[in-house]
Every structure is written in C-alpha cells, then in structure tokens.
Image (cartoon, rainbow, N blue to C red):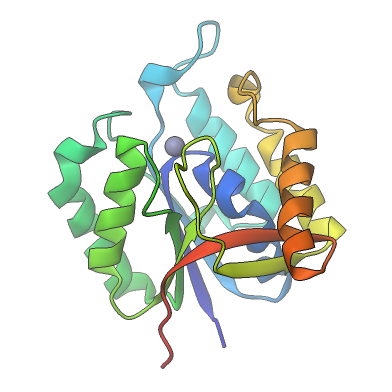
Length: 209
Ligand SMILES: [Zn+2]
C-alpha cells in the first residue's frame, strides 16, 4: 500500500547506511522514492578531496540505488550546526509533505546522539504527522535502538546498498564503511526474524489510512 517513500538524511550517506537495502527493495517494486540530504558536510571533507565531493558522491550513490536524479534534493546547511536551523528545516519538511505526500518516511532514530541527526528526527516527527515514520539504525550513533520493525532483504538489495556506499570514496576511512560491517549487521537483523538479511527500524509512528 506504500506508494511514496521519503528518506530524510541529515548528511549525504546517512540514507544509504540507514536504509539503502530498503530503498533498493522499494524501487524494485516500483515505489516512488525521494531522498533529501540537509548537509553536504563541506567542513568534514577529508584533506585531499574537493569540498563539494559529497554532492557528487551522493548523486552517484543514489543513482546506483535507482533513485531518479529529480527525486534527489540537497541542502547546504553547515555540518554539526543543524540545531541552529531547526525552524528552517521544519519549514522545508512542511513543504516536502505538501509536495510529495509520502506514505512512509525514513529518518534518524530518536535515540541518535548526533546533534544534526537529532534535529532531523525531531523536526521530522513534527512535520510528517500523517505518514508512517521509521527511524533507521546507525549503531555508531545509537546509544540504544529498539528493533521494532524489520524489512527483509534479498542479496540483490545488499549488493545495491554496497554499490551505493562504495561511491563515497571520501568516507571510506570510516570504520563502518566496509562490506563486512554492512553484511554482518544485515545478517544480525535477518537472524532476529529468521531470514538471511534485513534492516531493522524503530517504529516512531505507524499510520494506517
Ligand atoms: Zn550523519
């Protein structure tokens, strides 16, 4: 019954890490998927890379997943300073809700410790009242995570997620940016529900029309 899915990513790559497999699965079913990143994190780009590298990487990564370039929206809020722009971010989300009317919104977990992730999570809950809200898992940022929703994945979805994440050459030094970690987490979550692979989500709001 889900027709339109919206991914809210505080930074480019959060959507691919948190729900890249689910994106692949929804796109294969013909669901419309929109991806919004609020910061291209120019201040966090490692030395040796151009400052706008994450813009290029997210464009490539989301297209690898099959998201249409017209469904990718990028904003340039300063990394680590999203809390200062809460109202502006809320207003953007309210417009997105009117324009896109998503049935399902993926956003950071309410227990995420990063201030930019917290801002997107809290404003997302305020803006999208009549949609199902699922908080995605980023274990390096989660103090606790309630695995109250699972999306079962196939090998192709894991491959798509890995191919998308491989586009982020500037982030390859991160300890979680590797195939072993991605597969291990997907296997762990799959084992919880008796399937080979899954992504787990925190059910923030379940909306039934
Ligand atoms: Zn992030």
